[in-house]
Length: 295
Ligand SMILES: C[S@@+](CC[C@H](N)C(=O)[O-])C[C@H]1O[C@@H](n2cnc3c(N)ncnc32)[C@H](O)[C@@H]1O
Image (cartoon, rainbow, N blue to C red; front, side, top):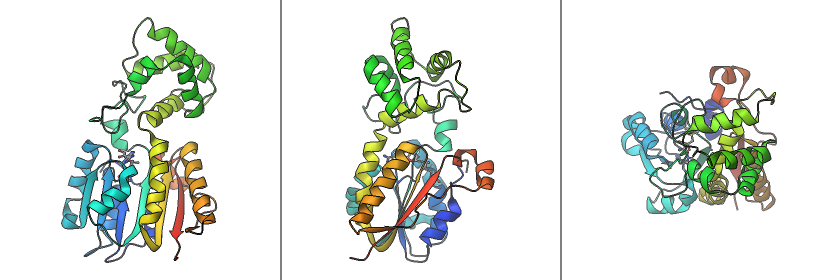
């Protein structure tokens, strides 16, 4: 399996999978975390796995084949969590996991324009069967002001204004078709930037968030997750950038204030230095945990 599940031991210790306990993996991806849970909650525990991307779900199906009838895999967005759970009559849910963002598959093989290290069409939709705008559509159609807002709000990029100006100037001459076209523009604008990360990182992040409505979908899904857990059940969310983490943190504080959950991580858990070295993708991960209260 090419995708290494992030903070896997921490997730397993927290979920304590045992025979008969049921889990929902809202971002099943290639099935990394799901496989570890299913290896421990048999012979009767079940896992419902959701992912928006059909191609990655095919991979999960292969990787989890041996668990047979103990796995249900659904292509949908986690924003429809309660509806999915009700349609499949999935009951007594002890743990719900969100491992946000993209999988190694999206970076390496998907051809969806998620990575600045590959020259691919500027798409970035997890669900490429949807009729939603692609990253290319946004770069082509949005006004300079909208692009500046996007790069500064979702990319938290100090060069947002100049980048937006430059994109609007360039697109009058030729369309930005591929990830390389975009990376070239960003590199030119940020040639004096001394940041260690690739100069295009924040712009790719901003486009991916807006193309997939990532923050809105998460905001819709989290309250559903709390509702669906049994009392004493556990919620785990791994996020990879500050906007997501902030949203999760504020959501958990609100639910704790309403006495629906107890937060178990005052500070988020981050991967050990060894894990970060072995799996560089884990470097920005932050895990927040909560337990549903008995009411
Ligand atoms: C970091 S990967 C999950 C990796 C997985 N935990 C593993 O160990 O194999 C995140 C996954 O979430 C999926 N995803 C993103 N937004 C989603 C949404 N709104 N609903 C369902 N899945 C989504 C992506 O397609 C991707 O496969």
